[in-house]
Image (tube, rainbow, N blue to C red):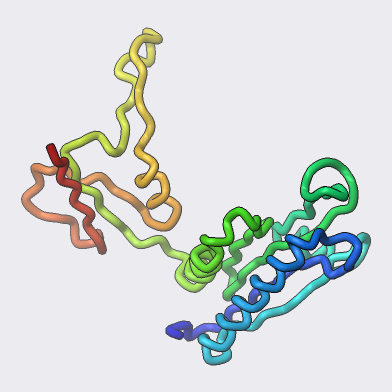
Length: 193
C-alpha cells in the first residue's frame, strides 16, 4: 500500500493442460490469486503481466531474459527429462529487477514472504545498514593460521547470512560508546545461561 512507483510483475506459468502436473496447476492458481491481492492492495501501482512460455516463443525468450527457468518434468512430477514447464516470476521497478526462477510448492508457506521480499528489493534497491552487537561469535571466526594450514575458522551463523540478503550487516563491538549514525537498526544479542 505504500508503493509510490509503478512495479511490474511478470508471471510465467505453463498453461498447457497436458504438460503441467495437477499439483503445480493448483499451486499456480494460488500464486495467481495472491498476485491479484497484491495488485488490489497496491492501489494500481503493481501491474501483473501473465505469460505462457511455450517452446520457441517470445514468452519463453522473455522468461529466460527475466531469469525464470523452465523445469524438466516427467509424468510423475518434477523429476527426470521431458517437457519443460515454467512457474516463476520477475519483479521490476525502474531499473531494478528481482527474479524468483521457480516457485517451488514446497516453499508455499513462504510464498508471500518471497514475493514481498522481491517487491521490496526493487522498490528500495539500496540495502539499509543494520548493526549486530553480540558478545558471542555470530559472525564466525576467520582461520587463525591460514598460511600454515592449521586451525579452522567458522562461518557466520545462519541468521546473519539471512540478514545479509536484505541488509548491509555490520558488526558492532560491545565496547563502543556510540553507534554510527548510518546504522538504521541495531540488533543486540544477549546470551542466556
